[in-house]
Image (tube, rainbow, N blue to C red):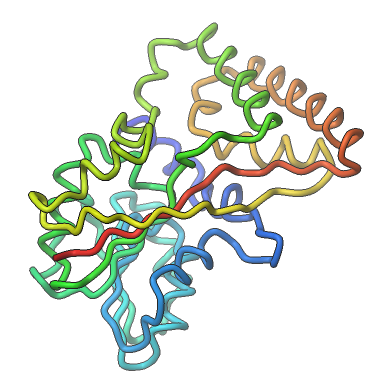
Length: 275
């Protein structure tokens, strides 16, 4: 994870939880809950929360693994990790490690499940992390991750992203490449290329859509959602306020059309199994 993204999390620990993590599905689930559901039954298993951040997913895992399971939270950012440790203080079978995702101290072939929420796309280059996953997972173990969608986003999402990207390209284009997703996640084929037989994984990766949305007044949605996009942190206060006003106007127009202000977040989840 690069320095620009680390600075964002140092300045705003818990950011992902407050933004993307606040979105809900039609049935009221967060993307953290959907991710954990995709892993299936994890009671009694050893589970790693990779890039655990402030610990919202770790908290769900800890409830599901039971007294005989084990949770390992891993994050490189000390500010985020401190929040996670505080959150799960007193949970005897939970521990946390400050480490790079590509070089943890977790013993080889000791983990049943690795979960990763909205971070895999930031591991650049990704292959060292894939190799580390293959090393720590038991045969038959699984890696499950939520990432930006491998599908077409909604019109309102495209409009908001267009506004934000135009502002960044106008004011700070030289930094834009530092916060962009890895190229391998542009489509499903790129993802399958990372998790291959050669790399220790069954190439038949399961990919699912994660349909969650943020809801509220246009002003509330613009205020809540905008900081969740790393590119917004490249803007000056003046440019950021201008983008926020543009977002609010677009959301107000969308609310008039659909009766409420809704921001669907185009997310996907995938499962890769260790052979």
